[in-house]
Amino acid sequence: MKNEQLAWTSSEFYQLSGIDVYEMLAFRVAVFIVEQNCPYQEVDGHDVNALHVFGKDEKGIAAYARLLPAGEKYETPSIGRVIIRPDLRGKGVGHELIKKCIHLMNEKWNPEQIKLQAQAHLERFYASHGFLAESEPYDEDGIPHIDMIQVKESFRTSS
Image (tube, rainbow, N blue to C red):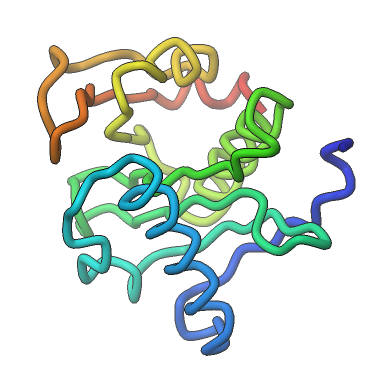
């Protein structure tokens, strides 16, 4: 599948239909709770203030990320809940999603920094987009994570 076949959209929570919210939460639960065998509170209260980024194809949601404004979870805007559907992993969709997220955040909030909590095994993936580790690996709900930050001069060039 070529990535150009994905239809990319971004929406504030209030713009999402009930079906959109249902599909988004079902997708997140399928990956973060079921696939990763990690029981935790997936619906965490941050969705209402987030910008939701979707890549969809004929099968439904293929890629998703949640963008939070400064002050929502961290002092700086952040990227979270990054998911690629299993059949599209390793095909460049994740890189396309992160580039779109960085572009949207730059347009909407013009931040000096962008933060994310990466699963530790994805550190090199995020580093390829200019993110630098700012913590040692730590356990988050039974999965090793690392805090990463990207500063403005690095994300201007990653688009």
